[in-house]
Image 1 (cartoon, rainbow, N blue to C red):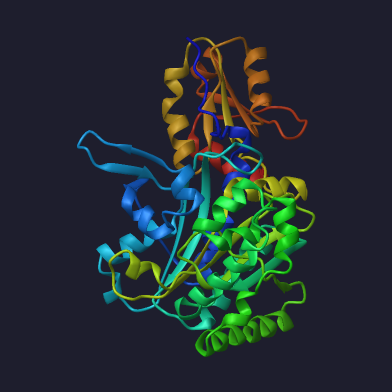
Image 2: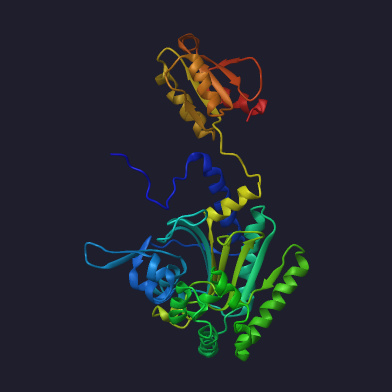
Length: 427
């Protein structure tokens, strides 16, 4: 029997870890500078959390969730997105009683049953940020600025910001009615996938990938024309704040896209996406929006929120596409080359070197030539060479592998060896 990884998943091998470490470090450090704190939620949740929060009529709930009954008979779902879980944690743990707003960030696996392709996996990893507990547009601007700073800190360029407003529940019904009436004029021209969507979620037609539907959408009603006075004030304030931010950041630009809706039912008012220029249909590398109704939908008190999610895999694809230079994988500082079955006499030295902050390994018990080849293959910086003669004399030979040079004989003493390495500035 031959086992392979499930379709739509990936093995993140050591050669790729430098990209992952780089992205996750930038994500965490950027969020912390904006005053966010880390939060972790379970990998699986009650299925009804996502049905109620994400929306039973969405593609995510209808087609993409990994749901199953556990041994106790409860319906469980591997999380398809992060916001509903964070909001459940906010409600359950009484975070309403903490100073508001609460700011969280997370790195987590997400699961969706989709057709695998570049940047779209059945298990993917996501960095997300949420601001819960304040409806003021200043926090819309801040979450967008955080996303932009994260992208900039990664070294990416030529990234477009698109945003839109969906209004609120006061005007949504009127807008959806007119949107449905508009598309119903062309029901005979719509592809089946979109004619089905029209019945359950007419907003989804605005970001359809079908050519005919995209052409028809250019004449569809615009949500910005249906805003209540309160929502329009919110939207105008956000635009003003983004314009002020752009004055101090000349490479920050945005475009109002009236067809931008995002794919989950809990969004209201502001929605946004960061998209690389000349990207494919799967090009969004960060997207989110405001979800003021969500916590109340989940049984909590009326509490506004806004956030974003960003796929780590898609971000790495874009880093490689733009050829952004990132730090190389961490190399080994010291490799112990040993002959004559004396490795047990070196345990103390190895432990001391590690305690002094040097990554240290011992080569496999082979010929000296093979051990040196091993040292070169793992990009070790220093070789400490020891055999029976050195043990009897209480000495070692140390060799700088990063530069051509002769060996130096030293006393077999970790303090002496560490001092020599530091003074010679070998590392």
